[in-house]
Structure formats: C-alpha cells, structure tokens
Image (cartoon, rainbow, N blue to C red; front, side, top):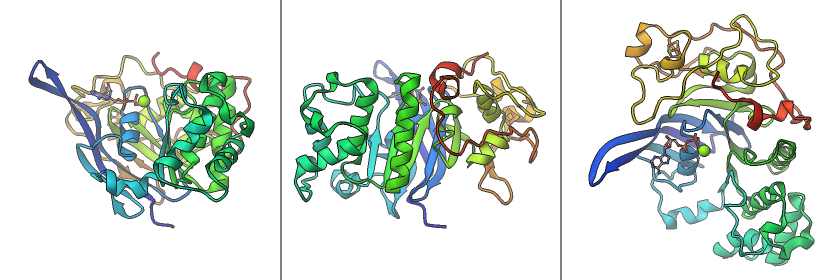
Amino acid sequence: MSEPLLRVSGLTKHFPVRTGFRATGLVRAVDGLDFAVRPAETLGLVGESGCGKSTTGRMLVRLLEPTAGRIEFAGRDITHAGRRELRPLRQDLQIIFQDPYASLNPRHTVGRIVAMPLRVNGIDPPGGVRRRVQELLELVGLNPEHYNRYPHEFSGGQRQRVGIARALALRPKLIVADEPVSALDVSIQAQVVNLLRDLQRDLGLAFVFIAHDLAVVRHFCQRVAVMYLGRIVEIGDRADIYERPRHPYTRALLSAIPDATRLGPGGRIRLTGDVPTPLNPPSGCRFRTRCPKARDICATEEPALVPRDGSGQSVACHFPEPDGAGDFPGHDGAGDFPEPDGRDAAGASGAEVTA
Ligand SMILES: Nc1ncnc2c1ncn2[C@@H]1O[C@H](COP(=O)(O)OP(=O)(O)O)[C@@H](O)[C@H]1O
Ligand code: SF4
Ligand SMILES: [Mg+2]
C-alpha cells in the first residue's frame, strides 16, 4: 500500500460566537477528524447539511485555519502553512465549489478564468497559455473555440466544467470537490460525475468528494467517511459502507436512497427530528437524540471510532450492527453512475433524511 497523499489527524474547527464584544459560545463545526487519502484514491465525505463537510474541505486546501489538529500533504505538515510555503502546494491541491456560477468571475472570459491559476503561478506551458487552456476545455468536454465566451453564456453543467478545467490547470494531485453537482439538474449531475470519474481514472487524481447523501458518491468513491455533527461516525471501503453498514446513522442515510429496496434484517431506519446545533452538541454520542438504538451509556460516554478486525472499516457506536448483519445487497455500485431517468441519481431530490 502506498503512503497516504493526505493525512488528517484530530482536525478541528471551532467558530467563536460573539454577542457584542463578548464571546458567548463556540460552534463546534468540525471536532477531531482522522482520515487519510492515498494517491489516486477517492474518498467520499458524506453527511447532512451543517455537519461540517465544507469547513473540512476548506481547511484541507488551507482556505480556513484549523483550530487544532494536523494536516499532512505528501509527507509535509501544512496545517499552518503560510502563503509562501503553500505556493508549491497550491498546484497539487485544488478545490471545486458547489455553485459554479458564484465561483466564476462573470466579467472574465472562460479562457481567462481557466488561465488564471497558470498566470498566478507564473507558469508558461509549452505551446503557450492559450493552447493549454484550449486543451483543458477539450478535456472537460467543452468546445475549445468557446475560449472567449463569458460564464453566463454557458449552462449550469457547462459552468461546472469550466470550474473543473480551472482546477485541473495546474495538474493537481488532489481535488477537494465540495458538492460539485448539488446545484445542478439531476439529469446533468450524472454527466458531471461521470466526467470527474473519467478524469480521476485517466489522470490518477485523488479526490475528497463531499456530498450530502450516499447516492451521489456511490459510483465515484472507493472509500466513504460518514460525518455527523462534526465527527466521523463510520469510515470504510465502498462495499463495507453500502453493504455492511455498522452505524445506525449510515443505515439511516442508506435508507434515504430512493432505490434502497432490499434492506436486510435491521430494516429501514427513518430519522426523526432535526440535527442538533453544533453550538451545543449532545453529550456522549452526538447522534443519540435521533438514534433508535440509544441507551443510557450513549448519553454519558462518547463512542470512539474503532476499527473492525481485518478491514479498513471503523465505526463509532457502543452498539454497532454485528458483522454481516443487515446486509444491503446490491448497494456496492461499481461501474457507471446510472444515466438519468432520475431515481438513481436523485441525490438532490429524493434523499431527505427527516421522516
Ligand atoms: N464562518 C462561520 N462562522 C460560524 N459558524 C460557521 C461558519 N462556517 C460554518 N459555520 C457553521 O459550522 C457548521 C458546519 O458548516 P459547514 O461546514 O458549512 O457544513 P456542511 O458543509 O456539512 O453543510 C454549521 O453549523 C455552520 O453554520
Ligand atoms: S452510540 Fe448509542 S446513540 Fe450513538 S449511534 Fe450507537 S447506539 Fe446510537
Ligand atoms: Mg457545505
């Protein structure tokens, strides 16, 4: 096994809350994450809105300063790396945002937008910047002749392709994709995910792919980490997460996938109630206020993320599903992201987790 490209330990972000001049509390947005991503590996980071996914992604690419913990990239500690130290790393580490329109400057041509990382980093590729940009546009399935057009002249899916071309300009090793298809029509989501997957394969890119449900990352990610209120509650290989989920919250997220029809003995788990506020997370297990299996100990002792023997699967629960119990057969979706007639790719439309 190769050394991790990215290694995160104890990663934490607390936002102070102020009323007037007084600090009155802390939003525990991300609270002690541990995970690693190997070169060319795809990790899905999944959980409901507000669980700390974007905060995590922004810390990984150093757009946000961590409160505590450590981020290592290619063996180097970049946790508090400044601008100058980051310059060589900026090339290797890129981010794609959820809203392709907000992240593209409407007054710049697409050619200029995609060329920006090259110019900022003083890179003059063989054949020139224009040629390189046109190659990139072609790589993401856009017409290289559209170099001089503006973002508003493109559709949402095409704009996200522009964002992807920009992220690829410096030939990165790892891309953090923060809900890259959540703002797109369901019919377009599959096309963009398939493009990302092809690029990942062809270019050997590593990905941290952020999504709010398990349907979207299912055909893309080799490993999946499930987050709840700033913590990872379960992490494992795709087959383990989709076929042998051991945490009640993972099971609940799987239950929310529209075509999760053949649920095993544990059955479908419907969540009730809202996610508690990260200003004041529940004591013990943070999931206990919504967990159908909660008992007394869950309120007093926080469960550690414990590895299951002989696999890369870890679960943070006092009463995890036993091995092999409650299989979700048919959920290990290797292969293509299904083309849309909607249901399967319906991450955005069908998978609310509230009952
Ligand atoms: N700059 C900020 N100041 C205060 N709270 C924040 C800030 N950014 C995010 N949060 C809070 O941190 C939590 C996690 O947010 P976020 O990482 O955006 O979640 P997700 O991407 O999973 O939806 C939320 O409760 C959010 O309101
Ligand atoms: S530790 Fe308790 S409350 Fe938390 S997920 Fe497990 S059973 Fe549910
Ligand atoms: Mg987010």
